[in-house]
Each structure stands twice: as structure tokens, then as C-alpha cells.
Image 1 (spheres, rainbow, N blue to C red):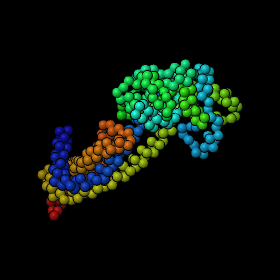
Image 2 (cartoon, rainbow, N blue to C red; image 1 turned 90 degrees about the vertical axis):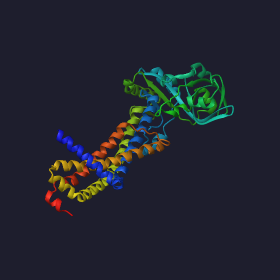
Image 3 (cartoon, rainbow, N blue to C red; image 1 turned 90 degrees about the horizontal axis):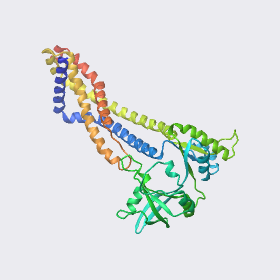
Image 4 (cartoon, helix red, strand yellow; image 1 turned 45 degrees about the vertical axis):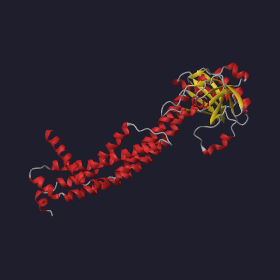
Length: 411
């Protein structure tokens, strides 16, 4: 064991000396490795970032929530005519579901309107104005940081009250206390009674939920009207493990309410976050597949370059190999030396590739969410080691099998 460790240490020293003697050649040799490492690191970083952001959003939306809507989230183009001709859902179905379903704890209809909020001279544009009932806070569990959520009485009476998302409140009221203030929602006067807890506190949090304003459904109807708008009836199961039972129960209630017989298809859709994640899995797999193919192609080209330069190195140092063997170096020691050199050349490319990836990740993060864990960096270096061993084995084997007498005669 001590002899093997000595050979590895000696091989490392010799490899480092050879690389330092030809720095530019070593860097140019690893261009393919650098490109491959940058490709695989950026691909994993972006996919991990998008996936973490999506999972954070889904966790806020609720894994135990059903979304009863007119269209499925996974739209099948061949059935678009069927989807278009489905009758619109009515918000009253939420109360019907909450009343009749045993595996449902709450249900709330939800409408959206893109608009703006204004207080004095400050305007926040491109936010979502959400019209819903008081049960919304039971369907989606979130904290109200300031004030309170609107009540059922306020909803039924159509009071002009609103609950602000954290980012909307921060922009409209950077200094002042928002509670009790009157703002304008698309020129409609509305009183602030609450501020939601911030959802975008972390790098992967769904900050878009902070850019919304929630108002009672009757107030929403009076401000913007419900004609021509699609409703999403959001239903919370009593427990995540009972989500399938709740879905079957809601399906039966809706079929009865819509007078569908046993042979008719559902003219509504019940979407779930789990189904959405399953539908996204093939897309993620395809992206990974394309990325792995391009990375493998780049690493193959880079590995061929490393193999080529290692053959050149073996040829240049043929007399050195002969001298080492003549003074007692074993074939294993020579093999270890050149394998170490090939691995170190690849690791040089890996270090440069990782450093470039860190810089590029900061740029990509301005457009897409990214996440670069330590495991990805370790994976990059492991790929470099495997590439060095794979493509450095043939030149190292050639050096190890060289005959001392013939090597010493080489000019």
C-alpha cells in the first residue's frame, strides 16, 4: 500500500511538472472539457433553479387543493373544440361542493383581473386583482402580516375592502402604515384592511404572489364584472392523503349538478398540482436528455484532444520513460504517472469550466431562477476525473509497455 501511495504521489508531482512546463498547451487541450463542464453545470443549475421555484410555488398553492376549471392545464390541441364548447362554470358551485362533499374542508371561487393599484402619486402596475370569497383563506393557508382578511359579511354586502400582497404594500406604502388607507384599483376606491405575509422571502419563493390584491367576490363583480371571465373553483381536501377521494367526490357532485348521464364525458376539468408535476416530468427529462447529449459530445471531443496530446507527450518523453524503466520503475508506476497527468489536464479544464459557470450563473440568474449546489460542482469534477481516466488510459498503457532499450535508442 505504501508503495502504491508513493507511486501516486510521484506521478502527481511528475504530472504537475509536465503541465507547468506547457501551461498554454494544457489549457488549449482542455477547451472541449471546459465547454462540456460549462454546459452540464449551467444545464443542471437552470433546471434545478426552475424546479425549486416551481416547487415553492406549488407548495404555496397547496398539494391538497383541487382546481375545478373549464380547461385542463395540459391542453390537448386535438380536443380544443371540445374544451371551447364546454359550458362555463358558475361560482355558486363552490358553495355546493363545500356543502355536500365529506372529504372537502373548504371551497372558494376565484376570478382574476390584470390591473393596477394607486395611492396618491405612487402606482403599482401589472398586478393581479383577485376576486374571491372569505373561504379563500381556508383553502390556501397563508398568514396575514398586518390587519385581517375580509369576512363573509363584507363579501355578501360588497364592501370595497382589499388585502394587499406584501410587495404591493411595500411599493404603495414605503413609509406610511397601509391599514385603513384608501387606494385606487383601476380607478375604483378601496380600503386596505390587511397585508399578506411575504411569499418571496427566499431566492426560490414565488414572489409573483406578492404582486396581487384580494377583494371580495361581490366587490370584484361590481368593479369589473363577471361576464366573459373564467372562474377557478379551488377546493381543499380534508387531508392530502384523501385528495383522490375528494376528487372522486367532487366529480360526482359536479356531474349531478350539470345533469350529465353515465355515458357523457365530464364537461369540466379537475386539475391537481401532482398531475401537473407528472406532466412536467417528461419535459424535464427531454431537457436533461438533450443537455446530456450535447455535454457528452463536447466531452468526447475534449477527451479526444486530451488523448491526442497525451500521445504526443508520451512520444516526446520516450527517452525519459526508458531511463525510468532502466533504473527500476515498474510499468504500474509509469502507467500511474501518465494517468495522473491526463486526469490533471482534465481537472484544469474542470476548474476553468466551473469558474466560468459561476460567472455565467450570475448572468443567467437575472433572467431565470438558478441554483448551483455543491453536488453539481462535485459532479463536474467527477466527470473530469472519469474523462481523464477514460481517454488517458491508452497513452498511459502505451508508455507502460515501452521497452527500456528501444526507448533509450529513441531520438
